[in-house]
Length: 312
Image 1 (cartoon, rainbow, N blue to C red):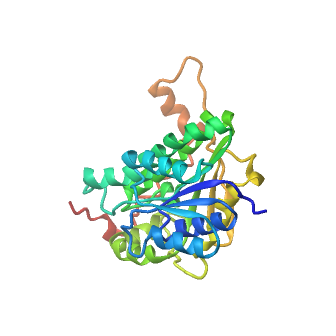
Image 2 (image 1 turned 180 degrees about the horizontal axis):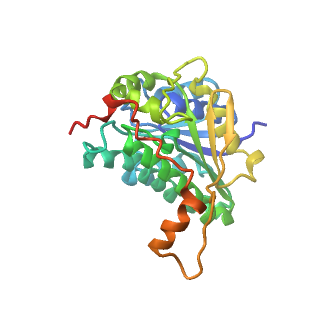
Image 3 (image 1 turned 30 degrees about the horizontal axis):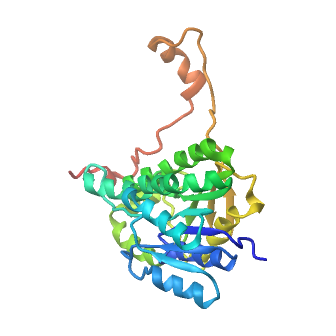
């Protein structure tokens, strides 16, 4: 028996790239897969992924509804109508744009959040009653390392970080019904990487100076397709959906190349306490010694005057 025999999975954004790899591996492990994609990305096609799955002896159906607030219920309803149940949701769809944060317009912001934040919640909201009633289910939300901070991609970074709060809350709220929810921060190089490198050129130097382990020290980004192919993301995602991971809920993992890392949950590094609360004078006196004295602002980039010219 395969690990997911009898299960039904929905993968959004599955017409190409990482989502396609999720769908193919879920099917190889026995799940009936709803391959959801609206086909906007170059080469993305839900029907072709379904054909691949069926040619390999698997079960799949295509869905071209948008994985947003309006479309999520239709995607879940179609999955239940076609396959009788829903066991797995992999929220993988994404949308977005790059711009300076002071230039970002509401339409670009809303497009990103409609898919990668509101859409993720809408998919979970639509699937939750089915999963909770049957007493089981696994949800995997796709976040991103961009959530740690990503100049030029403020909407994407913010929406993907919101997916972490969504993940934790879903785990807390419906874990009692046997439903698990986890998140991944994947890194892979595929067709969209070429587009990203072109679109991000204006911010590339700023990104290499601020997104590395030592801000202010330039670190070139690695886009090695042989080291970071999309197929290396899928095994861990599919594993999270199996009974082998039944004890894993509400956690976040970084998945890149050959490495999978369990990320720590936020904890206070230091705590300063004063009975009755703080005054500003007390903070002036105590905070440097008890909380902030050894901190520095790593993002002034004083050694790079070319980046300090503001252009409205």
